[in-house]
Amino acid sequence: MTAQGPSTAGEADGLVVASSPTESPWLRILLRCLAGTGLVALCLAAVGALAGGPAAALSVLFGTGLVVLFFGISLIIGHALGRTNPSGALGLFVVTYAIKVVGFAVVLFFFGAPAWLERTWFFSAAVVAVVVWQVVEVIVFARQRRLLFDEPAVNP
Image 1 (cartoon, rainbow, N blue to C red):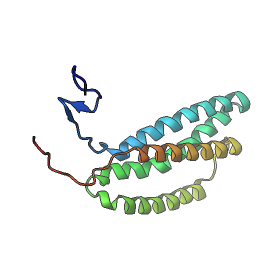
Image 2 (image 1 turned 90 degrees about the horizontal axis):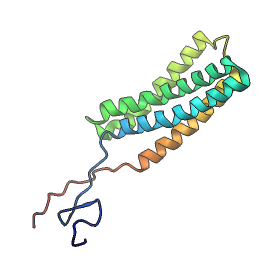
Image 3 (image 1 turned 30 degrees about the vertical axis):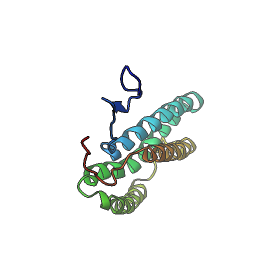
Image 4 (image 1 turned 90 degrees about the vertical axis):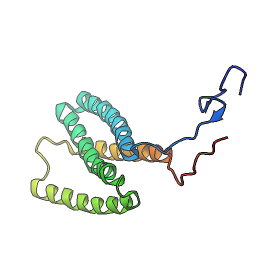
């Protein structure tokens, strides 16, 4: 602490300010994952458009969109229901994952692949999107702050 005032942003009026838990952790993860995956998808779509034409670019966007939809559903459910039942969030993720896998399998079985789909671009973009999404998700999750216990403030 200096004579002019607080020495760091974490101090105020000579006292250390307590940090608080991350607000809306699941929504924060979702937004960061969308940003990272979306940026990579746009770059891949541009490369696909130049190298393989419009069908390749659309295939990249379609593959990335399915990955975003698949993983985004869980985070939205975690955001909506995690506030009321934080300890049950992991169980919700497991149930949601099982439903998504079955749902996507049924959709693929009944509808199949569109005729315009470039399978190599689709598959490559989906794999890259999964990797980017998971890396961003782990990094953002690791940086979250959780309130483990609530101590009453001590007044000097």
